[in-house]
Length: 420
Image 1 (tube, rainbow, N blue to C red):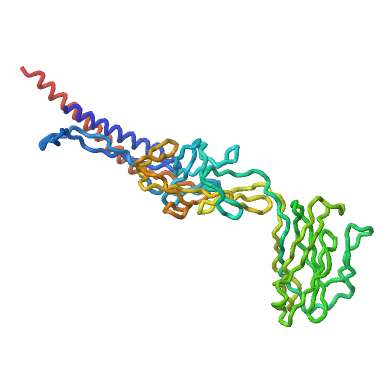
Image 2: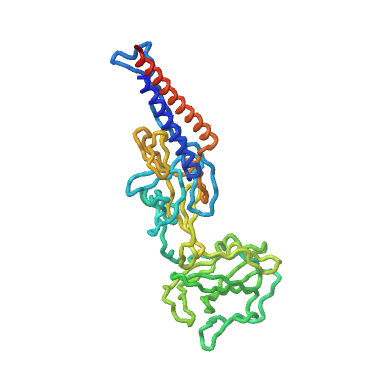
């Protein structure tokens, strides 16, 4: 029986060395969580309980406990490298099987899915362009298609008209057309100041819109517009008050572009439909300062190709496009467990749910105790090498001591055999 007790000690020490060796081997593995072997003593027992003076019968492995403490955060240049600062796990799908990991080294596969280094698909909630959830938890996929263009619907110009100006010497004749024969364009003597902006038709084609401002009498101005050199309609009145602003009754003050026909470089229709939009001038002023524009914005854009991906700290995945737009494609969902120590190892720094761990509690990053996501960073291994080397020495000593115990027991047994 003494031999068996010592053999159990050798097995326990060997298991301890194996666990320590695995920790050391993975000291540089992204998202790796160190483990510790835990043991319990063995005693003989019967149906009526253990014997009061019974000697122990060795040691047995009770569990290999994973240490889920936070690893160090190392920053990278890859936006799809994600680190969790806090509790929680990324949820992956391996052909429908749920896996959980802290290793956030993700990339995009040939089909556009965000995957782990082992090819398992990252799970999240689909979002529309406004950030609203549009479906159930599933694979996060990036679209490589062109994002559709948007024609200009609204625009805004904030400018200051110089109150010291006088009406132009030449009257604006109107009906200018750069494609007419002969071409006609306004002369600089017909207006006091002008500005321009780019607007887009519904096919995403850019067009130059110029706005000329003409001083009248009694603080009154008017705005004349041309798109691609073609005048778009009647003048827009701009009645400033004595304070240099528009009266409340005149607000909002807008230029209304109605049924504009987008043209190509020859002056023919470019195939885009008729388009109407407004240009808001409500915040413009008339002060005794030189003409200037402080803001020109419009909401149209051309088609765009995906240029990059960003992930914010709540896990929302944004695609950036060459046209300057961005769209939310999905939100990474994190999972937590009442007893994470009950998770079963599945290899490749992945875990699977078990009866002991309980069911996953899924939530967006930053809620439900899951922690926040750091994009462009990876969580390193939480292995402390110094601690592991000390444990290795202790396990080695235990192995040697149990081996020596077997030698001692062998000597005692041999003495008994040699009795005459």
